[in-house]
Image 1 (cartoon, rainbow, N blue to C red):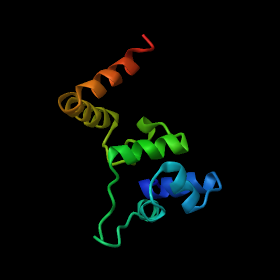
Image 2 (cartoon, helix red, strand yellow):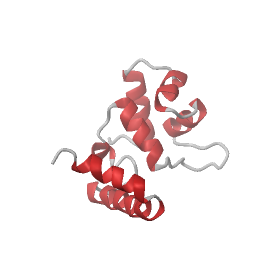
Image 3 (cartoon, rainbow, N blue to C red):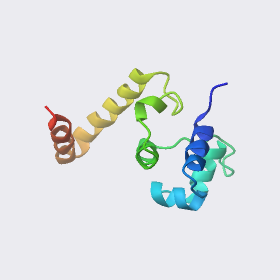
Image 4 (spheres, rainbow, N blue to C red):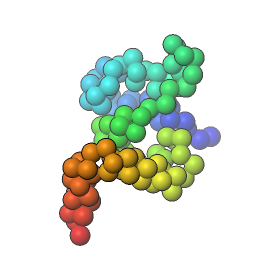
Length: 112
């Protein structure tokens, strides 16, 4: 049986012995939003909550999860789909904030 995104979040939080409020503080989101993500249900819309890429990054960083390992759980069909999404975001960043885009490129190229 495969785990969905909400189940993975709950598992990672409980594995670390964190309360909902403590985990949300570490991630940098509200505890009510984290609860919605874990349950897979937004009570206001009745829909499954879809976190932004920024929230996904915060979650992966806080829980020390490799984003590529969670690509399917995050709604991407495969790793390439996630990379295409990220590329789209960076093309948008290049247009909207060239300085941030150059900083990003410097960070990537730092190891080379």
